[in-house]
Image (cartoon, rainbow, N blue to C red; front, side, top):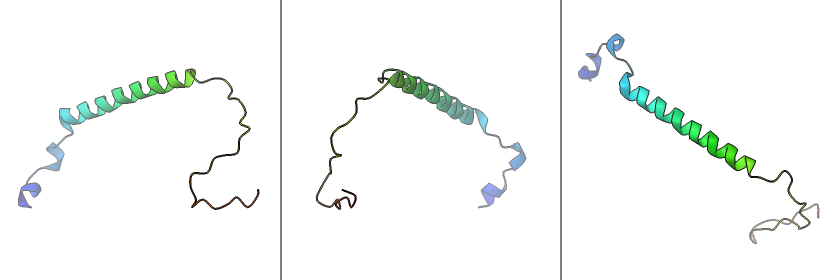
Length: 67
């Protein structure tokens, strides 16, 4: 642990690797936002009404007390 104590905290910075990570995260965020807006534009303005009851997935689902 003496090696870590020998480093002066005022002389240590994030460096170019930290900048690269932040820039890559920013670029990934821009691409994700573009993809999301494109998918939202393709959705229909209204969905048709659903006349069906919601389907239950298995026998462990308790019966609905309101029905």
